Image (cartoon, rainbow, N blue to C red; front, side):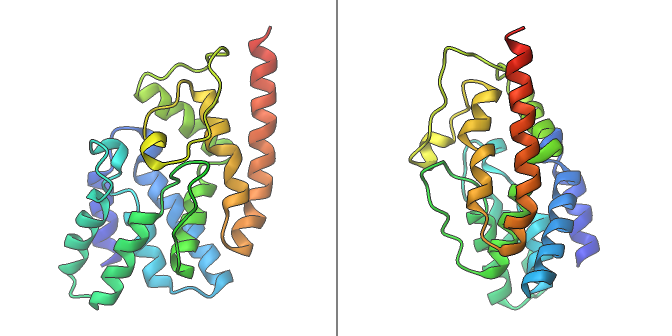
Length: 209
């Protein structure tokens, strides 16, 4: 089942390099590491991590339910306990960052583990590379100093593209450290957050010449 799911993700997640098989695999590895520390169910965590971006709303016309629909249909072929499929679908629906002022609705430890792992991949060196890759994919300018970041109060607001990639640092990346759920996730986020802050300071210094 895991091997087949890996193959599905490899075939399905193409396009933006920041949301591809390698992202799913990194999140899977981080999630399993955190899950072992936090005593979470490893099967649910691994499957949810692999499938968490299988039909991301950003690449499916804003459809927030596409991911859990695709994952549910896929997992049902393995005749898993319906409660496991339901839990994984719930995690996929709630895993995304939905805005600076929008609280996470994640209730289970498995969901918290996967969400932390996904957010960790949005921080540090990989997170920075993914952010600029995503901006380039959608034609977002690197930086527009005259346009200030927005702290979104709803997912509907957040789903609109940032005015610039640098704005996205303030609208999401630099907020993630304080949105980690698990003790392990919080610990891992500290170093990546500091690196992200240092990079942004250097970027702004060089931008000014």
